Structure formats: structure tokens, C-alpha cells
Amino acid sequence: MSLSKLTTYQLAELYQKNTLTQKDLLADLSSAIQSKDRDKRQIRAYVNFDSMQPRHRKADKGSKLWGVPVAVKDNICVEGEETTCGSKILKGFISPYNATVIEKLLNAGAIIYGRTNQDEFAFGSSCETSCYGPTRNPRDPQRVPGGSSGGSAACVADHTAIASLGSDTGGSIRQPASFCGVVGMKPTYGRVSRYGLIAFASSLDQIGPITKDVKDNALLLQAIAGYDPKDSTSANLPVPDYLNFLGKDIKGMKVGIPKEYIQSGLNADVKNSLDHAVKILESLGAKSQQISLPHTSHAVNVYYIVAPSEASSNLARFDGVRFGFRDKSAPSLLEMYENTRGQGFGAEVKRRIILGTYSLSSGYYDAYYLKAMKVRTKIKNDFDEAFKKVDVILTPTTPSAAFRLGEKTTNPLEMYLSDIFTISANLAGIPAISLPGGLAPDTQLPLGLQLLGRPFEEGQLYQIAYAFEQATDFHKKLGNVS
Amino acid sequence: MSSIDLKHIARLSRLHLTEQELKFFETQVAQILSFVDKLKEVNVEGVEPTSHPLSLSNVFRDDEGKPSIPIEEFLKNAPRARGRFFEVPKIIEDKSR
Image 1 (cartoon, chains in turn brown, red):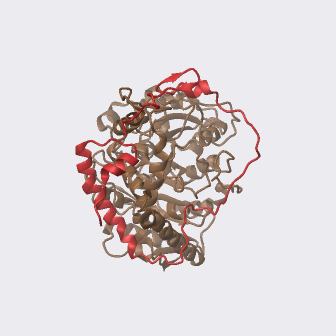
Image 2: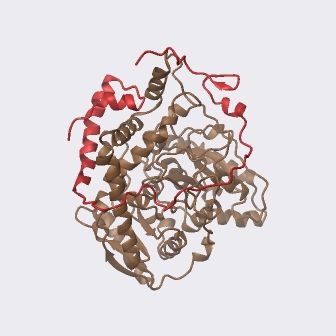
Image 3: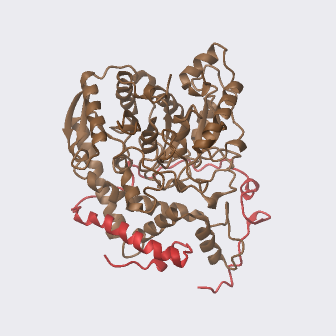
């Protein structure tokens, strides 16, 4: 069997028994990535697999991630590597330092290899806006892998990576995990350091793991979580041992189903997989109840003011002065700025910079940005109220299975609505995990389930996700684990 | 909703847009703005804004110098550099705006 189909804990066993070497594993992954079959399907999860030398450090062989290759999204800085956020404007930028998550993975013995494709600056839900061209969904190459961490989800689903890191601002880990049939966690805001993550929207961004199953996800988060003095928004709180939550029974756990999510118009397959999940969880002893998140319907509206506003400010640094692309023919400084940005950014990035600048501009700030921040408070309060009644909230991850390439590129609004179920978690800062919850009967495409929890209660999400995974076999049906 | 002065916003954003892009964005941005305009329906009287999910105030550290990455390292990424500086087109006599 192909080594690339194994999970991190299966690899650890082989390493312990001395029946596997890092070299063999990397060779296996490399040939998987370069295989003719994958070339034909044009999955293209990686932006430049050939040019990146795997990086690792001496570490204790007992470490849980020892010798585990982890692929990383192109917006996470790796020292000495080109890091471009899928954008022409950062072409040629060689990061002079490692992101904190990279340092932590290297210290835990992991091998950093391969940068994965993404929507440009993580603005998108389909992985189609990258300057390197689109990534395709390994479950059906005519379809998108989701975005923005499309490459990170596709490589795990396609067995060209053991595990990967993505980033999630409005669903960018969970939506592609759902579309590709793998497990993706967006941790609580502040759980994982953002140092070295190229910023999109600083009050929403979090780095998180994408893996073949729940146990791998817990192992990866364990390695990257924790306080970092280099990120003043990282939370100075102890990190529990997530493995302790796996296998704990979920008897009596209260699961809330928001009635606003299941109202009219929900896709029948998605609804069925949600109902099925409720039944499974109840059979395991959990209690389900309907709850209300009354401001849910405003989440996307709030997001498309807050996220572009923060992005327009964060992306001001890409001006051609210090790194990346510059229009060297511009005669004046002002034209250099304008032309560099005009030529360096793609359409979606420009659209969001315009939106954000408008929302923040004089005369509109109160009506847009300030208003959005106030509605954000109401969305957050909805969750606070809900978590007084229930322990976790269960929803579909996405309103449909993976859509076709090009299907939503001409209508940005329609694209934005594909994140309708994931955005609230970022606005409220709470943790949320997506895991395989079923297959659409006609297309056999994966459908994801989302579990949302109280701040810093990732352990509880792993507990219930693991119980569900063990009681079903979607992750096995999808071929994630053997 | 009033139409937006896209050229003005592009200038504030230091973003050159072609005539075609201006036309293209005009409709799309208007569509998106009328979508987010639905927030007007929400009553937020007496509600404090949330700029951040954590209730953080200022985070301080001791005022101690620490080593950082040498300037030469950073300048390797500069499109143009001279000595210890980033080089840009002449600024002082720029009368273009």
C-alpha cells in the first residue's frame, strides 16, 4: 500500500518499529505528486513542489510528529522559501523567517514540504483566483476543491500529503475540507499564533490543521497551539492534551441545531446528512435540541464589510517598495504605487480593496464599518446565549457539495454566499471543525458537518467529532484512512 | 443607494484600474453594497461595536532590545536597494497630483 495513504499516528508506529525511513516516505509522496494519473486530472494542489527542499530539524524520535511531512498554505512564511499568497505581487519574495507554527512543527520533528495553492491572498471560496491557476477537487476534477485553502485540502484528500496547514478567515479551512471530504479545524481566535501568517483580516484569521481524520487533527493542533509573545493577540492560556478527549463518551452532551440554518431552501442532501448526524449522535447518548441564532442571516453582510476593510488596510503594505513585484517603469512614486498594485493584484483582490476602502472612507465609516462591528456584537451575543443552553452547535459546513469550476466566478455575490454557514464562527472567534458527514447520493461528493464550540473548547469538539467518526465510516468510505 | 465614485476610491487605495475594470467593478461593487445595505434593518441602539473577538486591551512587553533580522537580509527582497536603503523614484519634485 502507498505510504502516502497513512496517517501521522500510523507513520509513528512504523518509525518506532524501524520499518520506515523518512527518505522512503518522501520519495513515495513525491512520486504520488508527479504521477501521470494526477497530471492528467490536473489536481495541482501544490504551487511548486519541485523547487522546495523538505525541511526538518533534529528532534526527539519519540515526538508524535517525528518524520511526518506537513504541507503548508502559500500564505505561511517558511524561512528561505518563496511565500506568495498565490499572488503575482509577492512573486520572488523569499521569507527571511519562519512563522511560529513552522517553528513549532519543526521542533516537534515534522518535515515541512510543499507549499499549497490558495485563492489569491485567501480571498475566495474556490481556489480559482490564484496566480498559479486553479486547484481541482480530487473527488471530481471538474469541481473546485473549495477555498481559500483549496490546495491544503486537496493534497490531503488526494494522498499527496499526510496532513497540511491552512488558514481560515470566513471558512477557508472548513469549506474546502467539506468539499474534499477531509477534516479541518478553525481554532478559537488566539489559540494559534498568527506570527508569520500573511494577514488578510487580522480580527478573523486563524491557522489550523487539515487532516485525514479527527485524531490526526488533534495531534496537529496540539503541536501548533499555544501562546506566542510574537503575536499580541495569541491567548496566554494553557493548551490541554487533546488526545485525552478522544474516545471519551458523549452521553448527555447537549447538541444545538440552529433553526435559522435549516429553514426553507436548504439543499435536500445537505439536510438529510444533518438529520442523519443528529440520529447518530443521539444513538451515542447526546441530546439534541433546536436553538436560535437570530442574527445569523446578517453574518455574510457583516463579513463583507469587516473582512474587506481589514484587508484593504493590511494590503497597503504591498506597494512595490520593500518586497515582491514593482512596476519599475513608473516615473513617479505615486504611479509606482498605483501601477505596481494595479498590475500585481488580481480582480478579486482589487474588488475587496475597493470595498474595504469605501467602507472605511470618510462619510461612510459609520454607515458601514461601525454598523457592521455593532451587528458583529449581536452575532457574538447570539452564540453566548446559545452556549448557555448547549455544549456544541451542529450545522452543515456548506450549503451544497463542491460546485463546478467557473460556476460562480462571474458572480462574486454568489461565491460569497457559499460561506454562509462558516462565517459566524470567525466573527464570534469561536472554534469550529468540519468533518465528513455523508455523501451526496447522486454525485457521491462529500458533504461536511460543522461542529462549533465555546471559546478554547477545541477538546470538546474533537471528543464529539471523534465519537461521530468512529460510529460512521465516511472517512473510510472516502478512502482517507485504510 | 447612491452611486460610488470608483475613481476616487481607487485613488485612495493607490490602485490603478483600467477603464474596463472600472466599468466591470462599478456594477459588481454596487451589487455587493446593496447586499450589505441590508444591515440597515438591524437595530443596534445601545450596542457596543466588536472590533475583535478577544476582549484584549493593550498588550505590553518590557522595553528591552532584542536581536532582529539584519537589514541586509531584508534588502535581499527589495525590488531596488542601494546601500542600507530601499530605493524608490524621486519623491521631492513629484507634482503629478
